[in-house]
Image 1 (cartoon, rainbow over the protein chains, first blue to last red):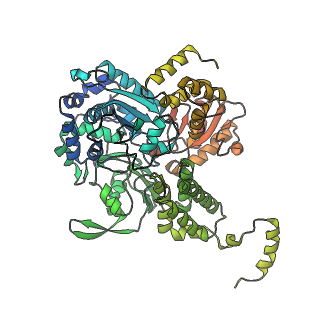
Image 2: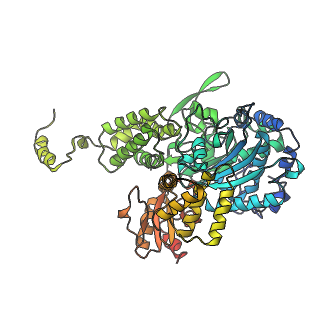
Image 3: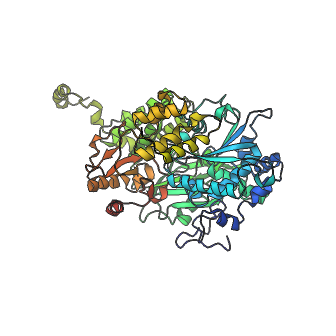
Length: 470
Length: 164
């Protein structure tokens, strides 16, 4: 990071490795193309345009880059899914619909370093052969949409977009498309439907894998903002060099967004897997709030399964199997998956012992009930039931059997829907019930099981109470 | 419907961004109409449909699906308070209560299909929004297009004062 100075109070932590967030909170930095170009901006795009497109895809494959939007799928492999015999136009869509609760990284790229994204997109579009690209920005980022539009205009003026870019013969147009406040548009096929001007009902895969049948039934690559920015750095460093960052199979850097009960919540870019959860909380985030103990953590956005502070996990280290606790988990894709959760979108939500897990689950259930698109019955009905049941429990009307009902509803959604939202909405409930069952049951009362719902029933209850139940 | 020339030009420009299918311009056109008129009217739906060569139902289904489109007038300043986990943990429900109290807004009228409550003088309207993606610096809210982070119930008064 050497010669870069950051705004006072916004300096990166020494454990950070800033690649994507190099210019975030940087002193003297602005969103203009002049500022970006003075810092070496668009050099990688120029270089890429002199290469064979396949060579770029190969570099990305070598780099081991995995998608940063949530699924962690290898980016180069995704690009390779465009059918080789394809004759239709190819599209690229940048997914800037950042809305997974707990995640707030793309916001800073869009607001502070739009040219990094545009450069990453130029390289990626050239690699996959896309001449038309869209940036799907969520509606709640109005400022970002303006900044991007201005940046695209500047890139046009400098000849990095439009016809025959830098004399390479490659044409590319990028447009900003604003969403309208629906979480489901972050799901790639839902996003495509939305971009086609419809309700964002996700499409079933197969056959609608976007790389083969995407936007307007043409091959379409949908990548997250952070992922596309990484492509620029892979160009700069070379795939092999990039792959040295992080850990094997979990290469590069990634931005961890920490929120909840820590001293210093915020965004921290680290090498993947080089930092354990304990180091993240205790060193980087300044520890928990004073006098508090860790209770639970959601490690990868609210859909990721919750981890309980005293859980033990068996993971493979080389050929050996070792037992580790929550604080020893390196924050990478594979280990978190081995621990039964996921690295997801990098949103780490920390909860201390002052939090009621019933209340937390209810908050999450409210989110998913609101955001279910309603296409598949198990999800549409189930997410609402889970919300209603936890609503009832937190308002004091729950019965112990409600907790089993919750788990049953969650089980009946998981795996029975068109898109991954089914899993996203059921995993919080199933994991909270599995790991905090006693607390959830304790927040219900035995008495409510026979609670009277009509005045007549209430009158009858008088007699029931008189006789002790055997 | 009275569409000023400047708005019409913006709409034509937006439609040109979708060379393959005009239908893709439904969301951008609705955004422009909502930005100008404050909300989407019935007339706005038919106008958009005609403009893009669609049936009105194709536009209405979009308006009714997305929480970002309103079918009634908001206040002069529309506030969206983030309700989701990290913000709720840092006090967004308390913030909502305080803002309603200060701006004289009654949220008892709020339902799933009508999430917006407007102050008696029409100056402020408010609704809960789901995650606004700034979880580390909650509670956060949007006032029209302005984003505010770390707005506590204590600083709610200062926030409203910026919009007087």
